[in-house]
Amino acid sequence: MTGRKFQRGKASIEFSEGPRIIGRASVAGKKEGEGPLAEYFDVIEWDPMVGCDNWEAAESALQKKAADLAIEKAGLVRNEVRYLFAGDLLGQLIATSFGTVDLEIPVFGLYGACSTIGEALCLGAMTVEAGYADYVMSMASSHFASAEKQFRFPLEYGNQRPLSTTWTITGCGSFIVGKQGGNVRICGITPGKIVDMGLKDSMNMGACMAPAACDTICRNLEDFGRKPEDYDKIITGDLGEVGQKILLDFMRSHGYEIEDRHMDCGIEIFDKESQDTHSGGSGCGCSAIVLAAYILPKLESGEWNRVLFLPTGALLSSTSFNEGQSVPGIAHGVVLERC
Amino acid sequence: MDENEKIKGIPLPSENMQPEEYEKYVKKVTPVHNMPLNMLKAFLTGGVICTIGQFFMNTFTNNGLEKDAASAWTLLVLIGSTVVLTGLNIFPKIVTFGGAGALVPITGFANSVVAPAIEYKKEGQVFGIGCKIFTIAGPVILYGIFASWIAGVIYYFLDMAGVYWG
Image (tube, rainbow over all chains, first blue to last red):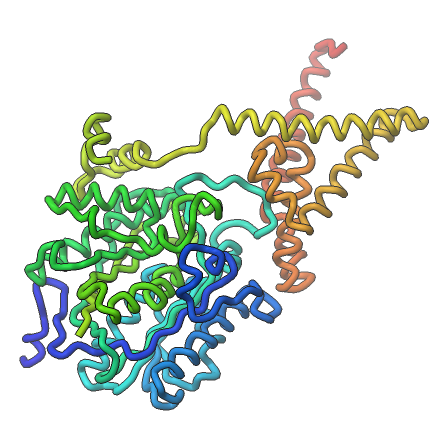
């Protein structure tokens, strides 16, 4: 029954010490490297193929790079990392399988659509806190071209994108979670449930995911007995401009005003006017590289003290879409605190 | 923003909304392209493509080609240049600007066949290009042929009934 003391409310966990994020790496693609956050990324990969033969292998190469860099920055070697929690957007997680095979670290392959890094951090933190590992790695990647190919059209096919669409980012974010070191800890988590409002528009994923983000934020506030003001920032993954608007409205219907502290990684990563990305960035890599490159440094420096990080995912496949299914959303909450 | 929405009378969304209600709300808050502007761009783009086509048509007929042969050569030129422009990643940019203006002429069809051919080349000649080259154009081909078959059947019966076709 000792475990009960960590449980908060209906779905959250509050860690007593809180595992630390002791290494972080962000590898970004060309378009991201031309965007507003360019100066923060560890590595900008200018070659979309990353020296490989195809898009899928390129995404795997991003993962390998990010993984090795995070291990190096944490001052570890590969075999000190006990488990790896990683995922991507491709069918059967091929980017992860082929990208991490050389690491020789026992791996849990995760799929949470674009919320994968949230899922990976939740599970990583639980594993470390429980003492099942000294160090684990959480990682997620996406690649614009491999995602377009799988979910939409071949790259060279000409079409006009609606203004509500988001642009899948090319990049990989990787994190080492450990018991000691660093000054940012994961003090709590609120894994999210799937929320389906019946919307079927895969070109408006922000609207599909916003209700899930609202659900997880409200759950988090309720479980921890907090108010939005207890967080310096509430940061969603890839709602984009349309999703942000809807999330703020949803939060208002629950009596919360979070406009002053809400931030969306997808909105931050691109300049929509000059980069023609419409609603914002998306993809597993989006929240992962923004967390590694932008959010964690702000916590480390003390500019922010506590944030709720909330990667969002739209759970669809081209098959489910063609068969007329709706696009359910999910959001996993991770509370990050400076210590 | 909030005030604006209150003025426009958009109610706040909630989890209990029916799918139709939520869809309606989403539609209200989602921005859309400027339709008249897009139509103007499509008109210009389509017009330019057709003018180029007419230019080749005239050149071919002026140089002694029969009308049928000239129009076949014109199509070849338009298709050929689309294929090259797609390979150079220029054609998608033209579509981003001109939309249907670039897609409705034969150029759009050419692009929809070449794009998968380029993309799926990595998956091999048979299972890549062979199986997937018509992923986008396939429906057009299938239902185009089907529609002309139906038209043929109608023609056949009307012809038998003695309807005069001019």
